[in-house]
Length: 364
Image 1 (tube, rainbow, N blue to C red):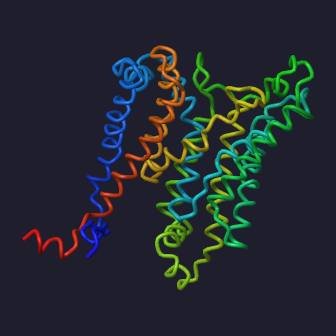
Image 2: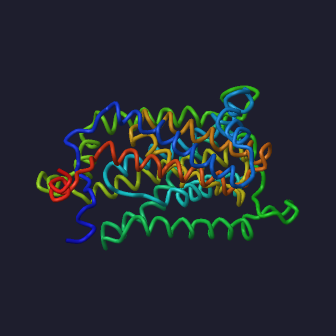
């Protein structure tokens, strides 16, 4: 008898507790805070100052909270799109690349037509960005559906390709000739900018678009037959195939929706707070949205709250870097540990530990 035979097994529960499911995110946050406080002590930083700057300061002043709302928009859009695929067991990890392609497609109009005017410009930019993100995601869908290639690896590698394409354009054909040799495009004209939603802040209409997309995602996944087919295909692919549900259709639909949402977020970013195409447009929203989607339980309503929290963490991380001298890597460690703690917590919500029978008899 080996030592491994005495280890407990994870057994799936017949039904996950709703109370435990709701408690998992705050419990994960508490565990992440405790773990990172220990890290800050080892780094010689004040844990109180870091926690205050990172978790409380974003909600204290209207200026900080408006920036939280600004960052909530792209995180919410991308996470809602990814969650649809994740629930269908299609794991799109390349939202960052789709975000970049959306920004590139949207920037084509003000770059090629800098003197164009009219109310139609920014809506067309958002539409082009969404199409660009969907087209980039379609590459992953093609290889996954035709050759059964891992969508995780393909989408992730395509993000690196998208980043190099961005660098090529900004260092080459789209480089602003009057930009003092900085790798950036020309500044966009006024009509190429998304209208401001709240006067005196940088919050724009893209937040309303993200909320509308969230409502559409809720109806699609909870009320529509097509959303039901996607979920069945993810939970029981053999049963779905027996019922005539195409797994390839689920792959295409999941990836196209995720790419559409990420591309739309990228377009709203360049047409909103940035106002031009820059190398810094690749801010990591596509990766952070994965954490947002899971913290929200892959549910459209939960994702709204988790995206708001992650946006606050972005602003709080910037505050902590200034006021508590915290390195940027520590902020990313906090995000990663939060996701890890949540995955562990939700695992115990859905599974229970069962000790081997031999171990129970010896204990008796």
